[in-house]
Length: 210
Length: 244
Image (cartoon, rainbow over all chains, first blue to last red; front, side, top):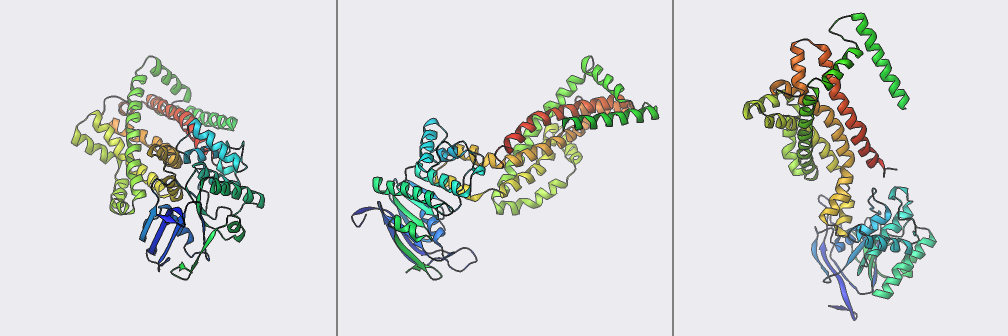
Protein backbone atom coordinates (compact mmCIF):
# COMPACT_ATOMS: atom_id res chain seq x y z
CA UNK A 1 0.00 0.00 0.00
CA UNK A 2 1.30 3.48 -0.68
CA UNK A 3 0.65 6.94 0.62
CA UNK A 4 1.66 9.78 -1.70
CA UNK A 5 4.35 7.55 -3.19
CA UNK A 6 5.69 6.39 0.18
CA UNK A 7 5.05 3.05 1.78
CA UNK A 8 2.29 3.14 4.35
CA UNK A 9 3.32 2.21 7.87
CA UNK A 10 0.10 2.64 9.81
CA UNK A 11 -3.58 2.86 8.91
CA UNK A 12 -6.17 3.24 11.60
CA UNK A 13 -9.88 2.96 10.76
CA UNK A 14 -11.78 3.61 13.96
CA UNK A 15 -15.52 3.28 14.21
CA UNK A 16 -15.69 3.98 17.92
CA UNK A 17 -13.99 3.78 21.28
CA UNK A 18 -15.54 4.11 24.68
CA UNK A 19 -14.59 3.22 28.23
CA UNK A 20 -16.99 0.97 30.18
CA UNK A 21 -19.76 3.02 31.78
CA UNK A 22 -18.77 6.22 29.95
CA UNK A 23 -20.14 7.89 26.83
CA UNK A 24 -18.17 7.24 23.59
CA UNK A 25 -14.77 8.97 23.61
CA UNK A 26 -13.82 8.62 19.97
CA UNK A 27 -16.10 8.45 16.96
CA UNK A 28 -15.57 7.38 13.37
CA UNK A 29 -12.17 8.45 12.08
CA UNK A 30 -9.50 7.21 9.74
CA UNK A 31 -5.93 8.20 9.03
CA UNK A 32 -2.74 6.75 7.64
CA UNK A 33 0.92 7.45 8.16
CA UNK A 34 3.61 7.00 5.52
CA UNK A 35 7.35 6.50 5.65
CA UNK A 36 9.15 9.60 6.92
CA UNK A 37 5.88 11.34 7.70
CA UNK A 38 5.11 13.22 10.90
CA UNK A 39 1.50 13.44 12.01
CA UNK A 40 0.40 15.37 15.07
CA UNK A 41 -2.85 14.71 16.90
CA UNK A 42 -4.19 17.99 18.20
CA UNK A 43 -7.23 18.80 20.29
CA UNK A 44 -8.39 19.83 23.72
CA UNK A 45 -7.35 17.92 26.85
CA UNK A 46 -9.30 14.72 27.40
CA UNK A 47 -10.48 14.44 23.79
CA UNK A 48 -8.80 11.04 23.32
CA UNK A 49 -5.41 11.83 21.77
CA UNK A 50 -3.44 9.58 24.15
CA UNK A 51 -6.06 6.86 23.75
CA UNK A 52 -5.58 7.05 19.99
CA UNK A 53 -1.82 6.64 20.47
CA UNK A 54 -2.40 3.60 22.70
CA UNK A 55 -4.62 2.11 20.02
CA UNK A 56 -1.99 2.83 17.36
CA UNK A 57 0.66 1.20 19.59
CA UNK A 58 -1.47 -1.93 19.88
CA UNK A 59 -1.66 -1.50 23.65
CA UNK A 60 -5.40 -0.82 23.66
CA UNK A 61 -7.22 -3.43 21.64
CA UNK A 62 -10.71 -2.76 22.95
CA UNK A 63 -11.99 -0.53 20.16
CA UNK A 64 -14.25 -0.90 17.15
CA UNK A 65 -12.44 -0.73 13.85
CA UNK A 66 -9.14 -1.92 12.53
CA UNK A 67 -5.46 -1.16 12.86
CA UNK A 68 -3.00 -2.09 10.13
CA UNK A 69 0.71 -1.88 10.79
CA UNK A 70 3.28 -2.60 8.05
CA UNK A 71 4.74 -6.09 8.26
CA UNK A 72 7.88 -6.28 10.41
CA UNK A 73 7.38 -2.71 11.61
CA UNK A 74 9.56 -1.70 14.56
CA UNK A 75 7.48 0.48 16.82
CA UNK A 76 8.60 2.57 19.77
CA UNK A 77 6.82 4.96 22.05
CA UNK A 78 7.51 7.73 24.51
CA UNK A 79 4.69 7.71 27.02
CA UNK A 80 3.19 10.76 28.69
CA UNK A 81 5.00 9.71 31.89
CA UNK A 82 8.52 8.31 31.39
CA UNK A 83 7.69 4.79 32.68
CA UNK A 84 11.22 3.90 33.68
CA UNK A 85 12.04 0.96 35.94
CA UNK A 86 13.00 2.75 39.18
CA UNK A 87 15.30 -0.08 40.33
CA UNK A 88 17.43 -0.08 37.18
CA UNK A 89 19.99 2.52 36.11
CA UNK A 90 19.02 4.70 33.18
CA UNK A 91 21.49 2.90 30.89
CA UNK A 92 19.91 -0.42 31.92
CA UNK A 93 16.45 1.00 31.28
CA UNK A 94 17.45 1.92 27.75
CA UNK A 95 19.26 -1.40 27.22
CA UNK A 96 16.23 -3.39 28.36
CA UNK A 97 14.25 -1.63 25.65
CA UNK A 98 16.74 -3.18 23.24
CA UNK A 99 16.19 -6.67 24.62
CA UNK A 100 18.60 -7.19 27.51
CA UNK A 101 21.53 -6.13 29.61
CA UNK A 102 24.26 -7.56 27.39
CA UNK A 103 27.36 -5.50 26.61
CA UNK A 104 26.19 -4.58 23.13
CA UNK A 105 22.80 -3.29 24.32
CA UNK A 106 24.43 -1.32 27.13
CA UNK A 107 26.89 0.25 24.67
CA UNK A 108 24.03 1.25 22.35
CA UNK A 109 22.13 2.59 25.36
CA UNK A 110 25.07 4.81 26.35
CA UNK A 111 25.23 6.13 22.78
CA UNK A 112 21.50 6.90 22.75
CA UNK A 113 21.80 8.69 26.09
CA UNK A 114 24.78 10.68 24.86
CA UNK A 115 22.85 11.83 21.79
CA UNK A 116 20.31 13.36 24.15
CA UNK A 117 22.82 15.08 26.38
CA UNK A 118 22.97 12.41 29.07
CA UNK A 119 26.44 11.06 28.29
CA UNK A 120 28.33 9.65 31.27
CA UNK A 121 25.19 9.56 33.42
CA UNK A 122 24.04 6.06 32.56
CA UNK A 123 24.71 4.83 36.09
CA UNK A 124 22.08 7.12 37.63
CA UNK A 125 18.82 5.70 38.92
CA UNK A 126 15.55 7.22 37.63
CA UNK A 127 14.73 8.46 41.12
CA UNK A 128 17.73 10.77 40.95
CA UNK A 129 16.55 12.48 37.76
CA UNK A 130 14.45 15.56 37.16
CA UNK A 131 11.29 14.98 35.12
CA UNK A 132 12.97 16.60 32.12
CA UNK A 133 15.93 14.21 32.33
CA UNK A 134 13.61 11.23 32.80
CA UNK A 135 11.74 12.27 29.64
CA UNK A 136 15.00 12.37 27.71
CA UNK A 137 15.84 8.86 28.98
CA UNK A 138 12.44 7.67 27.77
CA UNK A 139 13.14 9.24 24.38
CA UNK A 140 16.61 7.65 24.33
CA UNK A 141 15.00 4.25 25.04
CA UNK A 142 12.57 4.75 22.19
CA UNK A 143 15.22 5.97 19.75
CA UNK A 144 17.83 3.33 20.68
CA UNK A 145 15.52 0.65 19.29
CA UNK A 146 15.86 2.36 15.85
CA UNK A 147 12.12 2.25 15.24
CA UNK A 148 10.32 2.66 11.92
CA UNK A 149 7.39 4.27 13.70
CA UNK A 150 7.75 6.46 16.77
CA UNK A 151 4.79 7.44 18.91
CA UNK A 152 5.33 10.51 21.06
CA UNK A 153 2.84 11.39 23.78
CA UNK A 154 3.72 14.93 24.83
CA UNK A 155 7.34 13.81 24.93
CA UNK A 156 8.86 17.28 25.10
CA UNK A 157 6.87 18.63 28.03
CA UNK A 158 9.04 19.79 30.98
CA UNK A 159 12.17 20.02 28.83
CA UNK A 160 13.95 23.34 28.63
CA UNK A 161 14.34 25.02 25.26
CA UNK A 162 17.89 23.71 24.68
CA UNK A 163 16.84 20.12 25.50
CA UNK A 164 13.75 20.36 23.28
CA UNK A 165 15.93 21.49 20.39
CA UNK A 166 18.40 18.68 21.04
CA UNK A 167 15.60 16.09 21.20
CA UNK A 168 13.96 17.47 18.06
CA UNK A 169 17.32 17.36 16.25
CA UNK A 170 17.72 13.68 17.13
CA UNK A 171 14.20 12.84 15.92
CA UNK A 172 14.51 15.01 12.80
CA UNK A 173 17.82 13.33 11.89
CA UNK A 174 16.15 9.92 12.02
CA UNK A 175 13.22 11.18 9.92
CA UNK A 176 15.56 12.54 7.28
CA UNK A 177 18.08 9.70 7.48
CA UNK A 178 15.99 6.56 7.81
CA UNK A 179 12.50 7.70 6.99
CA UNK A 180 11.29 7.39 10.56
CA UNK A 181 7.54 8.00 10.81
CA UNK A 182 6.22 9.87 13.81
CA UNK A 183 2.74 10.02 15.28
CA UNK A 184 2.70 12.54 18.07
CA UNK A 185 0.56 14.34 20.57
CA UNK A 186 1.75 17.84 21.36
CA UNK A 187 0.22 21.08 22.49
CA UNK A 188 3.26 23.05 21.41
CA UNK A 189 2.81 24.50 17.92
CA UNK A 190 6.52 25.21 17.72
CA UNK A 191 7.44 21.51 18.09
CA UNK A 192 5.04 20.65 15.30
CA UNK A 193 6.47 23.34 13.02
CA UNK A 194 10.02 22.21 13.66
CA UNK A 195 9.13 18.66 12.64
CA UNK A 196 6.89 19.83 9.77
CA UNK A 197 4.06 17.82 11.18
CA UNK A 198 0.74 17.28 9.42
CA UNK A 199 -1.94 18.18 11.93
CA UNK A 200 -5.00 16.09 12.62
CA UNK A 201 -7.46 18.10 14.68
CA UNK A 202 -9.82 16.17 16.94
CA UNK A 203 -13.11 17.90 17.66
CA UNK A 204 -16.36 17.16 19.47
CA UNK A 205 -17.49 14.35 21.73
CA UNK A 206 -17.15 11.61 20.62
CA UNK A 207 -14.09 13.09 18.96
CA UNK A 208 -13.74 12.94 15.20
CA UNK A 209 -11.27 14.49 12.77
CA UNK A 210 -12.11 18.06 11.78
CA UNK B 1 22.58 2.81 67.47
CA UNK B 2 24.36 -0.52 68.07
CA UNK B 3 25.46 0.72 71.45
CA UNK B 4 21.84 1.43 72.42
CA UNK B 5 20.75 -2.02 71.28
CA UNK B 6 23.46 -3.65 73.34
CA UNK B 7 22.63 -1.53 76.36
CA UNK B 8 18.96 -2.43 76.12
CA UNK B 9 19.89 -6.14 76.04
CA UNK B 10 22.17 -5.78 79.04
CA UNK B 11 19.48 -3.95 81.02
CA UNK B 12 16.92 -6.68 80.22
CA UNK B 13 19.36 -9.43 81.28
CA UNK B 14 20.14 -7.57 84.45
CA UNK B 15 16.44 -7.21 85.26
CA UNK B 16 15.94 -10.92 84.61
CA UNK B 17 18.91 -11.76 86.83
CA UNK B 18 17.60 -9.63 89.70
CA UNK B 19 14.09 -11.09 89.35
CA UNK B 20 15.50 -14.64 89.39
CA UNK B 21 17.60 -13.90 92.46
CA UNK B 22 14.60 -12.45 94.27
CA UNK B 23 12.35 -15.34 93.27
CA UNK B 24 15.05 -17.91 94.14
CA UNK B 25 12.99 -20.63 92.50
CA UNK B 26 13.81 -23.34 89.92
CA UNK B 27 10.81 -21.98 88.01
CA UNK B 28 12.79 -18.83 87.21
CA UNK B 29 16.47 -19.61 86.58
CA UNK B 30 19.04 -16.83 86.14
CA UNK B 31 20.33 -15.91 82.66
CA UNK B 32 23.68 -17.44 83.62
CA UNK B 33 22.00 -20.78 84.50
CA UNK B 34 20.23 -20.79 81.16
CA UNK B 35 23.45 -19.88 79.32
CA UNK B 36 25.34 -22.74 80.99
CA UNK B 37 22.52 -25.15 80.18
CA UNK B 38 22.48 -23.92 76.57
CA UNK B 39 26.21 -24.44 76.23
CA UNK B 40 26.03 -27.96 77.72
CA UNK B 41 23.13 -28.96 75.50
CA UNK B 42 24.93 -27.52 72.50
CA UNK B 43 28.28 -29.17 73.16
CA UNK B 44 27.47 -32.50 74.81
CA UNK B 45 23.66 -32.63 74.65
CA UNK B 46 21.31 -33.30 71.71
CA UNK B 47 20.50 -29.63 70.99
CA UNK B 48 22.21 -29.50 67.60
CA UNK B 49 20.24 -32.50 66.41
CA UNK B 50 16.91 -30.96 67.47
CA UNK B 51 17.88 -27.52 66.22
CA UNK B 52 18.75 -29.08 62.85
CA UNK B 53 15.40 -30.93 62.68
CA UNK B 54 13.40 -27.74 63.34
CA UNK B 55 15.52 -25.67 61.01
CA UNK B 56 15.08 -28.28 58.28
CA UNK B 57 11.30 -28.03 58.70
CA UNK B 58 11.50 -24.24 58.52
CA UNK B 59 13.63 -24.40 55.40
CA UNK B 60 11.12 -26.69 53.66
CA UNK B 61 7.78 -25.39 54.91
CA UNK B 62 8.57 -21.69 54.74
CA UNK B 63 9.48 -21.57 51.01
CA UNK B 64 6.44 -23.78 50.35
CA UNK B 65 4.16 -21.31 52.14
CA UNK B 66 5.89 -18.41 50.40
CA UNK B 67 5.54 -19.99 46.97
CA UNK B 68 1.95 -21.19 47.34
CA UNK B 69 0.88 -17.94 49.04
CA UNK B 70 2.70 -15.95 46.36
CA UNK B 71 1.03 -17.81 43.52
CA UNK B 72 -2.42 -17.63 45.10
CA UNK B 73 -2.14 -14.00 46.23
CA UNK B 74 -0.49 -12.90 42.99
CA UNK B 75 -3.22 -14.51 40.88
CA UNK B 76 -5.96 -13.03 43.06
CA UNK B 77 -4.38 -9.58 42.89
CA UNK B 78 -4.15 -9.68 39.10
CA UNK B 79 -7.54 -11.27 38.45
CA UNK B 80 -10.52 -9.53 40.13
CA UNK B 81 -12.91 -12.33 39.19
CA UNK B 82 -10.71 -14.98 40.82
CA UNK B 83 -10.34 -12.66 43.78
CA UNK B 84 -14.12 -12.47 44.22
CA UNK B 85 -14.36 -16.28 44.05
CA UNK B 86 -11.54 -17.08 46.45
CA UNK B 87 -11.65 -14.16 48.88
CA UNK B 88 -14.26 -15.73 51.23
CA UNK B 89 -12.15 -18.90 51.41
CA UNK B 90 -9.02 -16.93 52.09
CA UNK B 91 -10.77 -15.08 54.92
CA UNK B 92 -11.97 -18.40 56.29
CA UNK B 93 -8.49 -19.94 56.13
CA UNK B 94 -7.02 -16.90 57.87
CA UNK B 95 -9.24 -17.65 60.85
CA UNK B 96 -8.44 -21.37 61.12
CA UNK B 97 -6.12 -21.97 64.12
CA UNK B 98 -2.77 -23.57 63.30
CA UNK B 99 -3.51 -26.28 65.86
CA UNK B 100 -6.65 -27.37 63.99
CA UNK B 101 -4.69 -27.58 60.74
CA UNK B 102 -1.94 -29.58 62.46
CA UNK B 103 -4.40 -32.02 64.06
CA UNK B 104 -6.26 -32.55 60.77
CA UNK B 105 -3.01 -33.10 58.85
CA UNK B 106 -1.80 -35.64 61.43
CA UNK B 107 -5.18 -37.41 61.42
CA UNK B 108 -5.47 -37.54 57.64
CA UNK B 109 -1.83 -38.13 56.70
CA UNK B 110 -0.45 -39.84 59.81
CA UNK B 111 2.15 -38.66 62.31
CA UNK B 112 4.85 -38.13 59.72
CA UNK B 113 7.17 -35.50 58.34
CA UNK B 114 4.92 -34.77 55.33
CA UNK B 115 1.95 -34.00 57.56
CA UNK B 116 4.07 -31.75 59.78
CA UNK B 117 5.47 -29.74 56.88
CA UNK B 118 2.11 -29.53 55.14
CA UNK B 119 0.46 -28.32 58.35
CA UNK B 120 3.01 -25.53 58.76
CA UNK B 121 2.82 -24.48 55.10
CA UNK B 122 -0.98 -24.51 55.06
CA UNK B 123 -1.19 -22.50 58.28
CA UNK B 124 1.09 -19.78 56.98
CA UNK B 125 -0.02 -19.73 53.34
CA UNK B 126 -3.18 -17.54 53.75
CA UNK B 127 -1.38 -14.60 55.37
CA UNK B 128 1.33 -14.83 52.70
CA UNK B 129 -1.40 -14.76 50.04
CA UNK B 130 -2.87 -11.59 51.55
CA UNK B 131 0.50 -9.79 51.40
CA UNK B 132 1.17 -10.91 47.82
CA UNK B 133 -2.35 -9.98 46.74
CA UNK B 134 -1.68 -6.49 48.00
CA UNK B 135 1.60 -6.48 46.07
CA UNK B 136 -0.07 -7.60 42.85
CA UNK B 137 -2.76 -4.95 43.27
CA UNK B 138 -0.08 -2.29 43.60
CA UNK B 139 1.43 -3.38 40.28
CA UNK B 140 2.14 -0.46 37.95
CA UNK B 141 0.18 -1.20 34.77
CA UNK B 142 2.05 1.58 33.01
CA UNK B 143 5.26 -0.40 33.37
CA UNK B 144 3.44 -3.46 32.09
CA UNK B 145 2.45 -1.55 28.95
CA UNK B 146 6.00 -0.34 28.55
CA UNK B 147 7.29 -3.91 28.80
CA UNK B 148 4.75 -5.05 26.20
CA UNK B 149 5.62 -2.24 23.83
CA UNK B 150 9.36 -2.91 24.07
CA UNK B 151 8.73 -6.65 23.79
CA UNK B 152 10.38 -7.67 27.05
CA UNK B 153 10.94 -11.43 27.10
CA UNK B 154 9.20 -13.40 29.87
CA UNK B 155 12.51 -13.72 31.73
CA UNK B 156 13.19 -9.99 31.50
CA UNK B 157 9.70 -9.21 32.75
CA UNK B 158 10.10 -11.57 35.66
CA UNK B 159 13.63 -10.47 36.56
CA UNK B 160 13.47 -6.76 35.87
CA UNK B 161 9.81 -5.90 36.41
CA UNK B 162 7.73 -8.27 38.53
CA UNK B 163 10.31 -9.49 41.06
CA UNK B 164 11.79 -6.05 41.90
CA UNK B 165 8.28 -4.65 42.14
CA UNK B 166 7.22 -7.46 44.48
CA UNK B 167 10.47 -7.35 46.49
CA UNK B 168 9.19 -5.08 49.31
CA UNK B 169 6.14 -7.33 49.70
CA UNK B 170 8.32 -10.45 49.56
CA UNK B 171 10.49 -8.97 52.28
CA UNK B 172 7.49 -8.11 54.41
CA UNK B 173 6.09 -11.63 53.87
CA UNK B 174 9.43 -13.18 54.80
CA UNK B 175 9.82 -11.08 57.91
CA UNK B 176 6.34 -11.71 59.27
CA UNK B 177 6.40 -15.27 57.97
CA UNK B 178 9.63 -16.36 59.60
CA UNK B 179 8.59 -15.11 63.00
CA UNK B 180 5.29 -16.98 62.77
CA UNK B 181 6.40 -20.13 60.99
CA UNK B 182 8.76 -21.21 63.72
CA UNK B 183 6.04 -20.77 66.31
CA UNK B 184 3.73 -22.97 64.26
CA UNK B 185 6.51 -25.51 63.78
CA UNK B 186 7.04 -25.76 67.53
CA UNK B 187 3.34 -26.47 67.95
CA UNK B 188 3.37 -29.11 65.21
CA UNK B 189 6.46 -30.74 66.74
CA UNK B 190 4.87 -30.74 70.19
CA UNK B 191 1.79 -32.44 68.78
CA UNK B 192 3.28 -35.17 66.68
CA UNK B 193 7.06 -35.33 66.18
CA UNK B 194 9.79 -37.08 68.12
CA UNK B 195 12.51 -34.53 67.42
CA UNK B 196 12.89 -30.80 67.03
CA UNK B 197 12.84 -27.87 69.45
CA UNK B 198 9.07 -28.18 69.87
CA UNK B 199 9.40 -31.83 70.91
CA UNK B 200 12.11 -30.94 73.43
CA UNK B 201 9.97 -28.11 74.82
CA UNK B 202 7.08 -30.51 75.38
CA UNK B 203 9.43 -32.96 77.15
CA UNK B 204 10.86 -30.31 79.48
CA UNK B 205 7.39 -28.83 80.04
CA UNK B 206 6.26 -32.21 81.37
CA UNK B 207 9.28 -32.19 83.71
CA UNK B 208 8.72 -28.54 84.67
CA UNK B 209 12.38 -27.97 83.75
CA UNK B 210 12.30 -24.24 82.97
CA UNK B 211 16.10 -24.02 82.59
CA UNK B 212 16.10 -26.41 79.62
CA UNK B 213 12.87 -24.96 78.31
CA UNK B 214 14.40 -21.50 78.13
CA UNK B 215 17.72 -22.78 76.78
CA UNK B 216 15.99 -24.48 73.85
CA UNK B 217 13.78 -21.44 73.20
CA UNK B 218 16.77 -19.10 73.23
CA UNK B 219 18.70 -21.35 70.85
CA UNK B 220 16.09 -21.04 68.16
CA UNK B 221 15.51 -17.35 68.77
CA UNK B 222 19.23 -16.80 68.19
CA UNK B 223 19.04 -18.70 64.89
CA UNK B 224 16.12 -16.52 63.75
CA UNK B 225 17.90 -13.37 64.83
CA UNK B 226 20.91 -14.46 62.78
CA UNK B 227 18.68 -14.96 59.74
CA UNK B 228 17.19 -11.50 60.34
CA UNK B 229 20.60 -9.89 60.79
CA UNK B 230 22.10 -11.47 57.67
CA UNK B 231 19.66 -12.52 54.96
CA UNK B 232 16.77 -10.13 55.67
CA UNK B 233 19.05 -7.13 56.31
CA UNK B 234 20.85 -7.84 53.04
CA UNK B 235 17.52 -8.04 51.21
CA UNK B 236 16.39 -4.86 52.96
CA UNK B 237 19.39 -2.89 51.80
CA UNK B 238 19.05 -4.31 48.29
CA UNK B 239 15.38 -3.34 48.05
CA UNK B 240 15.97 0.11 49.56
CA UNK B 241 18.90 0.79 47.19
CA UNK B 242 16.74 2.37 44.49
CA UNK B 243 14.26 4.11 46.77
CA UNK B 244 15.06 7.81 46.87
